[in-house]
Length: 254
Image (tube, rainbow, N blue to C red; front, side):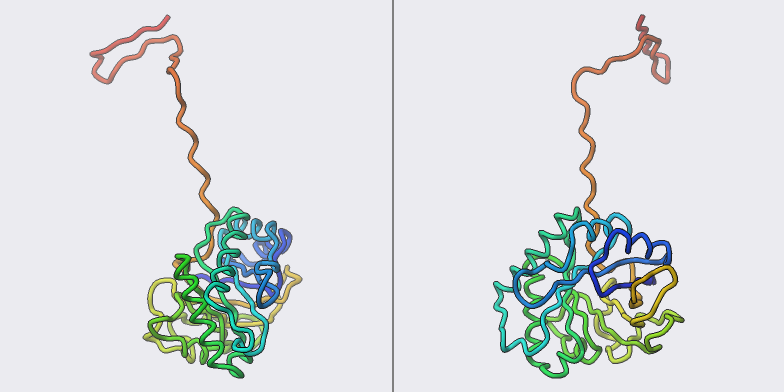
């Protein structure tokens, strides 16, 4: 298991450098959008995403809608497709591979409007499926559990803090998240657990949350550099004697 931290603001290059120095096991960072509807992606800076991808090698873009009842401002399938597409463009502009997209559903929202947020989470997961990326849904264990089934998101990200909001302490067992059935989302990389929240870390000016995850989680990653082009044209040999291993062929160049 690997641990990670996440922050409540768009990370800067300085944030990333400080975090890497403070927490050697740092694994991923989250970016946030400003609210429901256009312009999606406005909460991220390309330079901040680049810093995370280059420094940490992992990034999870997380859409944060406005609170309230989703049924009062319904998003149709095209709206979710647009959100995912713009997120893709943002990650790719930062030099990343778009492998996953997340949706933040805070506990108070889902408790007040459970049906509306379940419908929104399912619509988001289907948009990710159409885009061929993994869907990640953050929320309370009760809300996450209500999403189990055929239309469930690819990866769950429950926020459950058994140790409160102080020092992280012992990293818990990712397979046994309180409120989440042990038999659900058991595949490789299907679980992220935010087990600690709102604490300070020496060397960081940010209040951070702590999570546990595995290497298989499909975070967005840096794009591979294109291969070097194969040299073309004649090969020029320097003066000398060239022979094969059996000395059956000898070439001397003066």
